[in-house]
Image 1: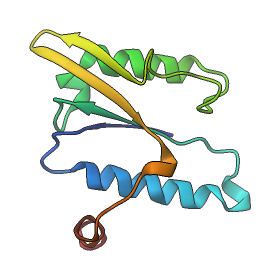
Image 2: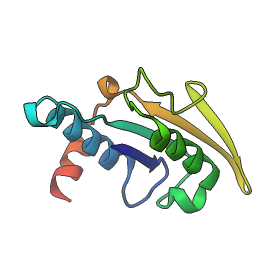
Image 3: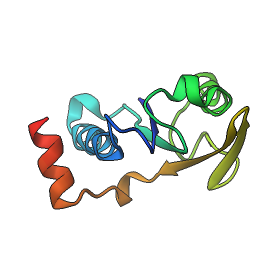
Image 4: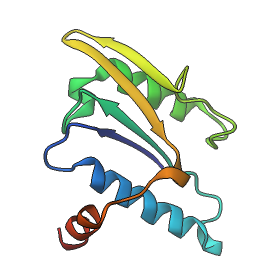
Length: 116
C-alpha cells in the first residue's frame, strides 16, 4: 500500500497519515499480513488533493510504485534522492518518504486521530 499525503492538508492532517501508517505497520506483524508492503510519502506545499495540486510528483511516485515487481523499500526507490523536488505550474513540491521506524505521534495527535 502506498500512502501519498499532502503535508498541508487541513482536513486529513499528517497525523492521520501517520496513524494509518502505524496501523498498517502493526498489522504487518500478523501472519496473514506478512507479505504486504507499506510506504508513506509526504508532499510539502500540497493540501488535500495531491493528484490535482501536484500531478507531476504524484505521477512520478505512483508510476514507480505501480511498475515495481517488488515494492519493498530496499527494492524500489520511489524518490531519486532522500527528498525529491518536483516543479509544478504553481511552484516547487518536495517529496519525502517517511521511514516506518521514525513515525511517532504526539499525545494530541493520538487523541485527535482516536476520536475522529
